[in-house]
Image: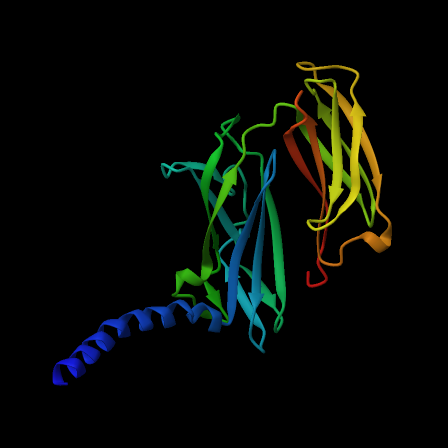
Length: 262
C-alpha cells in the first residue's frame, strides 16, 4: 500500500510541470492585447492580414520609434530569407503613437508576389514571422516580446502554366475577372462557389489562341443577392480539363469576403 501511495505521489510530481507549462501557454489569452498574422497563399501572390486587438476595457496607446508599425519576414526551409516587408521602403524617423479603444480591432494587409531578386521562389513550405514594432503601451515598456510576435507556415504553390495576371473587380454579387490564359486544348472552364454550395455551374470559355501563346480574357459573373454567403468567401475557380476529362491547372480567384465581424 505504501509503495502504491509513493507511486501516485511520484506520478503527480511528474505531471505537475506539464500542467504548469500548459498554464503558461494560456497566458497570452489573458493579455490586454494580441497581435497575429493570417497568411493566405494565392496562385500568384501571398496576402498577409495582420490583426491587433485590444481585449481590455480601457484604451491602449502603443508607441513606435518610427512610422514602421510592423515587420514581416518569410524564410524558406533552409532558414534563408526570401522576403522582408521593410526592404526598399523608407520610414519617418520620429516617434508615433497608435491608440486602440476598448475592444477595438485594427487590421493591415500586405502582399508579396513570391519573388526574390526578380525571380519567383520555388514551390514549398515557408515560415512567416511578423513582429509589431511597438516599444511601449500606455507608457510602459513592453518586455514580453512574445506578445509582439507571431509565426505561421505557408505553402507557396508552383507557377500556373495556363493562367496569369488574374484580377477581380466588383462586389455585392457583380464581378469582372480578367487576365491571360493559354489553355492547351484552346478552352478553359470556371465555376463559382462559396465553400459549401456551387453558385455557378461549370461554364466553358473558348480562347482565340492555344498554348504556348498567351491571350487576354474577360469574364463577368452575377450572383443573386439572396444567394451570397452571409459569412465566408466567394471563389471563382478557373481550370481546364485533360483529354481524359480530369480537372487540371486549377486557379482559384477570391471574388469577395463576407464577414459581419470584420
